[in-house]
Length: 279
Image (tube, rainbow, N blue to C red; front, side, top):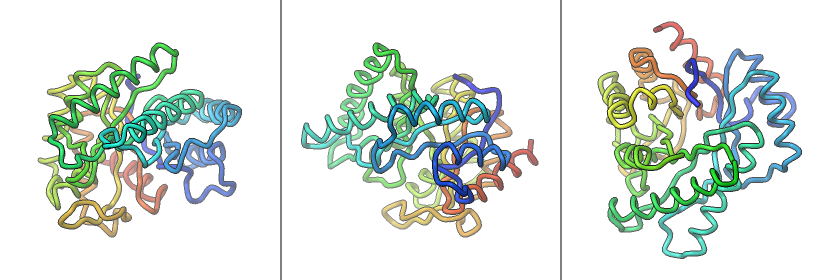
């Protein structure tokens, strides 16, 4: 569902949360004046239905929007059928529990090329995600599948590939990790002009609705010849986040911006403040 504004938050419970739980993290998000939090199921979906209901109630009470990051170990282009089945199941369980929490967007890294062409991998991923989205709809699970732009050229998931999937498949909308785009291009995708070009592509492919329902990841990032190495704090990185916030303002985008820097809430608050300043 498109949001009325652009919300900023953290990938997981803020570091300054005294009691380490999702519900307490949500309360801390509100204390910080942030608006969203991504539930990190990256090591596995280990939240039960009872806890999910508590998380949902807390998020509603605090007016904090939630999303989910599914487990890291997903490859919809594996050579082994059982690994593909396991990958689909991980996304499904993330969506099922995430929906119980009140989260709609389910983010995941979709696949590796494994020497296959972009066209071959795109077709495989599209078939699997189309079937999964239909299953979620049939079961009344309110979830949008969000394959994420990836940080290494060996990973399926550049901007054009994911825009095509998003335009073709019901229930699928991409997550744009601008830092991954920067790392994947080995230092490009790091100026107001390039950020604006990316948002222009979103509008061309998905219309104004695409800009009104964005899911975004941002962090500082270290990269090399093969792309992403690791996340950094914004102040330690060459990533031009101020110019990114200016592009967000220029295009009047709406949705969620999730900070993945090591200094989670520090950089989330920094981006929020810069964005509000350039509005």
